[in-house]
Image (cartoon, rainbow, N blue to C red; front, side, top):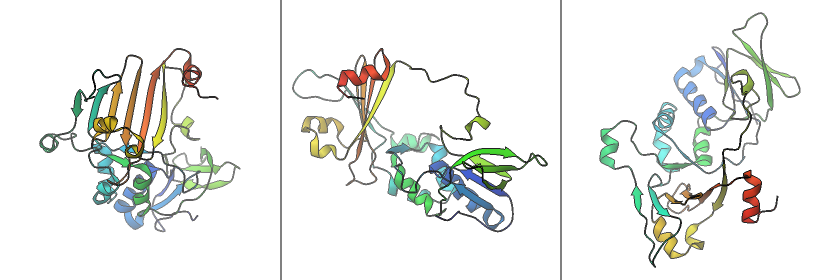
Length: 272
């Protein structure tokens, strides 16, 4: 895979991480700075890596797509009605289960109040795909370190895992996520991971319409989210496919239990 370089002269910018945020920034910079920009994008993972399931963009994320010149594609990769919620208890009494509340964003309020616009669930892989149409070419490079030049602290040199120089840049943007190898240059994590009392178990159903009973499908309806709440657990179901025909759905089970994740796995019969 070739390294993406924009223009021949101008500020040299490196973006570490070719996920959605890194590529969106690359699209904005390319659009707004044009030929004045020298841009390189570094990515450790394969180009076809799994991007996960759904993502709802708030007004700032949607503005980023607009600034990258991609907002007209937004609804092509988003699930209709996926920002509405059907709320129900974990256990029902009687023969016909009904949701006790439906949450949605009325169009009138969307027009009246800034920040209250539609926030449909977008498919991460498809979202990354349309951004790649603007910025294409990702190197399979493992970035592990960054250092400032001794003579000029305003510029930084990126080093690969084997110590090889990847270049010197005016600006280095870390968009490589929570487990970034550059994170310790920006954030000091004094606290370690602490169990907060609950475990979130994720799963995916290709099509609830093919496996769910009709009573459960009636609760789900055309809404993008179904949430059941109990005393010690909650379950959430969320559609994230891009079209009406794409029914892929994420399942999230939030269980509060003493003993951490091992106790939860024993309880539900999963062998580690």
